[in-house]
Length: 79
Image (tube, rainbow, N blue to C red; front, side, top):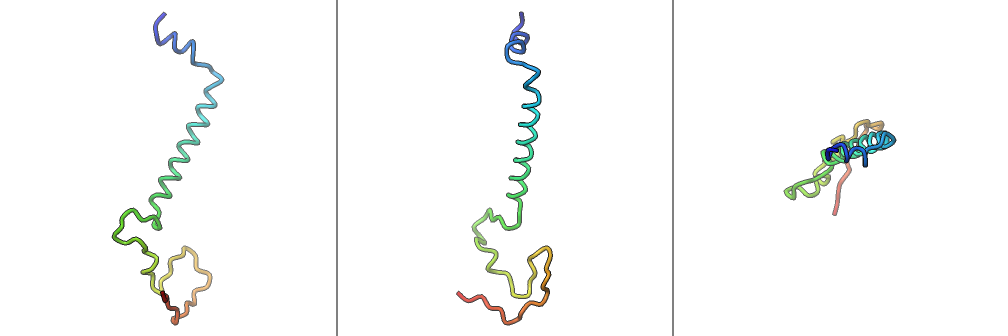
């Protein structure tokens, strides 16, 4: 008996295929989600600009949907 046939006869079962498929899909989805989070604009990978949110001006809109478009011009960021 060849080594491959012996391996498949010992370790391969038809019942394992759905488990392998589910685990594979879950790992692919988790990897894609982590990659998406890592490429987001709020993630900082360099130290040249460690806090980019401090450079946002009072009149800049950073939200995808802005329900209240009237921004006060007297907004100041004081530290």
